[in-house]
Amino acid sequence: MKFVIIYTLIMKKKIIFFLLIYYLFFPGLAYSKDINPTIQPEPSSEKEKLNKYKFGKFKNFVIVTANDYATRVGYQIIKKGGTAADAAVAIQMMLGLVEPQSSGLGGGTFITYYDQKTKRKHSFEGREKAPQKLKNDIFLNDDGRPKKFFDAVIGGSSVGVPGTLDALYKVHQKFGKLSWKEVIEPVIRFSEEGFIPSNRLINALKKEKYLFEIYPESNFKKIVEEPKKKFFNREYTSTLKKLSENYKSFYNTKIAEDIVKITNQSNSPGVLNLNDMKNYKSIHEKALCHKLTNNYEVCGPNLPSSGTICVVQSLILFEQIFAEQIKSNSSFSPDLNKVLEILDFVYFLRDRYLGDPNYVYINKQRLFDKDFLFKNFKSFKKDSKVSSIQNIDEILNSTSHFSIVDKSQNVLSATSSIESSFGSRLLTNGFFLNNQLTDFSFKIRDDEGNLIKNRPAAGKRPLSSMSPLIIFDENENFLMTLGSPGGKAIISYVFKSLISILYSNSNIKEAIEDPNYIKIRGKIYIEDEKLNNKLAIKGVKRNLTSGLGIIFKEKERYLAGADSRRDGTVRGN
Image 1 (cartoon, one colour):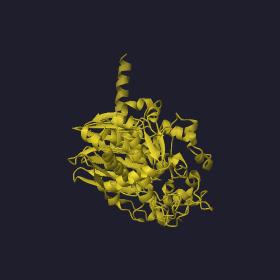
Image 2 (spheres, rainbow, N blue to C red; image 1 turned 135 degrees about the vertical axis):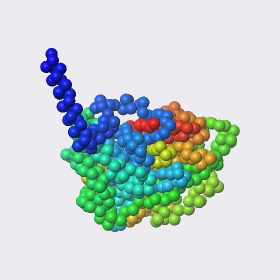
Image 3 (cartoon, helix red, strand yellow; image 1 turned 30 degrees about the horizontal axis):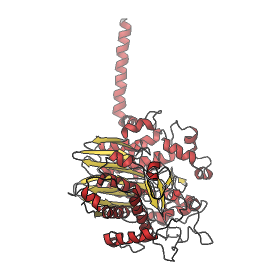
Image 4 (cartoon, rainbow, N blue to C red; image 1 turned 45 degrees about the vertical axis):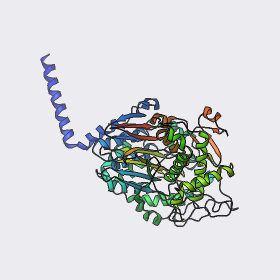
């Protein structure tokens, strides 16, 4: 018995000794094992188990993203003392790994940032640019007619110079507190250990046709074959390591060469070159802000995102059309027929008047003028017709949104995309390349022979609908931030939510979960059959898979919500 006791004591001392040596000489490994279990869920985790993280109330900080892996890494960065800018880098790098069908290094982004200390509102635009050798008839067939949507999407001709990384770096340089390498390291460690794919990624791959035609032996096939097994993207891990040392390696080393090569040697080849990559620069400027009649201020990205302009135009018309109800009621339910008419008109204005302001003249003052809007709205109602929509995916494509409020009350709202699901389907260095050039109008002239503002051109940025907005109250204090994926439908989703919160006195859960709708080119799509039956003109019932993320300031706390239609979660403290 004594022998057993003595032996046990000796063994305990040896274990303690070896643990001390381990932590003294290998602190990095100890930290790595500490950080990853808080990101990596149990292998059996399902979407239902994340429902408790869809909505929450927080006092100090909050993060809303499209995927819980990303939400958790953002949470860790903030807990560690990082800012919203620090967390944004880690979140986007994580989304590129776990939600590659929606956004990533091969795409673009719009970021709206509120600096609490200076009270200034910033816009960081990382929109893709067309190559300098692009021809304006790129998406026309030999007979002059527009190509079919997916004929244009698949391959290198649809790939613009990626801008997400450069925009993220600018945000971090301006507002980050932790080092660039420090905010990427937890994503690298996570990537090395592999991850359990989300249901959304699994389903996207099961439905995917073009990717596996190009890459029959793609590593991503493993997700379809063994969806419950950990997935490893070794190439992406390697890319992250290179970028953590020097972000410019994306634009001027072998990564850039690989992007150019795969784009130009694909079927439907592009005309990208290394100078396009080396010369890319994202834009940092003041956010585009507009005050409504109730003194709420809406701030968001400038053109070539149409999101801020279109949402503001919708709200101006809404306040004009429903002026009596707004005046006499603290909350009311607007006539959906009229709301849909507003949306249809705003999409019409978008097609006619908006484009890259570096290439075409845009009169923003007129576009926000109440008299101009209402006069044209009345004539549009009389003359509006239903026009054909070539492909619904052209309107309701992929993308990802996330929002952050950090401990210092800085606010960041970001929407990023590679456009269609898996973008151009071209894959290099572990990430997919965008097909954002198909956001240009395929046609050069409209039916009346006028040049279209959003026509393709060398070096030009295609029009976007991304709407990462920040709203301020009548005292110019932060009120809420919101955004969504969904292609052109983003404008409808964000407008719906703002109506619910600002005019119908709905809570954020109702604003997110209530049925979606869109009217564009005279065509109505709607989620709910009961609502559809109330419309004067019936719409097409279908899923409208928004990914709304909202953070709302109520007194001394933040109310936050993530759309149940996708994999998003909310976490904070």
